[in-house]
Image (tube, chains in turn purple, red):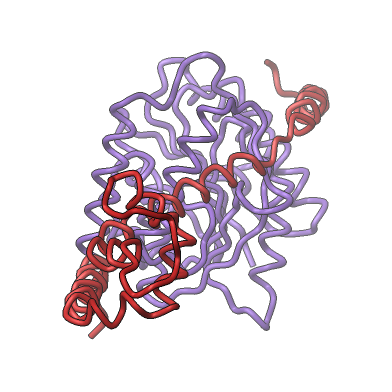
Length: 239
Length: 126
């Protein structure tokens, strides 16, 4: 089984080498076949150059690069990464070190469990054993509030972290669901799980720790919140 | 065919309205029911009635329990209030028991240093 880790990057020249090395170490230690697929949206900080040099270190069969002409959105980055990948199972995660590769073997163990037969394993920050480093009370409030709203209004099959972006997918599952997803922003990840559940796919969970790497600047302005609520309402009326 | 989420909520809302209508048409019987009077008392509706000047005492029994009447007459309102309380309690609970893991950040710092060393050893120039 080949595992494809798709890493969308925008200005990650500092983090990309580190995440690649840790991924390499994790998969090698677990004796699993892997490939990293970097999808770079023409980062101004020249992440592409760093990616090419990393390709020389890890080898072309472990490290693929998709270079795109500009910031084209996360959904299309995932699609482009999927097309360029050959693994039977896909890991989607952030490249900024907020997600730790050590949880990937745990996700694989859940997916391998013959009793449960899950199609997607979602990393959750809200279950026991999971959590976040670096969130103040306001951030926790908005996150828990948003999550409550989503789990109350939508049918999510028991998933506890709807906006998380650290997941393991069977290739068939993500290829089937991704084309159906139209939301932007935080609602994007939520829509994947909602549509997967609606399609009858099974979702498992692994508690993960999330290290918030965005220092100072707020990722959570009024715009983001509105976009999320719009996505939520759209799903409420169409699923 | 499976219901869409908004249809489910709509159906629940209609059900609640039907129950409300049925309760209103049986108001006298419900008013003197001890179950309804107890629920009204637990929700503090007798006090509400007293403070609104609708009744002369807090009493929780008797055939003219005003609290019970308030309960039935404003049933949809109490449902919304109950939902609000549930939502607030859920979120506050989640925030209070939120998993803070500062050690993950310090662990990561160490691993970053180690990864950099291995990369340099493999010939990667930072």
